[in-house]
Image (cartoon, rainbow, N blue to C red):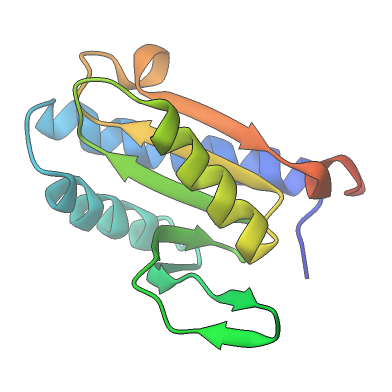
Length: 137
């Protein structure tokens, strides 16, 4: 069951807080995997339900494909979170999170780039798809 817009907003605030805490403690310059492990710890401390490294299912003309596509974090079966530690977010990174959102039928997504000096202002971007627009308040 998908969350309401209000629940997604509240949960997004908590996820952002967890990511900011990780970034404040570690700063930029580490590997994505380090931030991933620390963010998992922060989400657990906040008792937020999630799946890490979830395999993204792909169906092609009735064929279920086994792929290596993995969503970094899938939170409360509604929010896709993708983590990066790169110099600059590229269009391919945005396409990746939008594709994962569509394949998982998730209404909301957050892309974090930990390789910034200020995660809140420069290192995060949110995404919504058509499913978000039809959610209840």
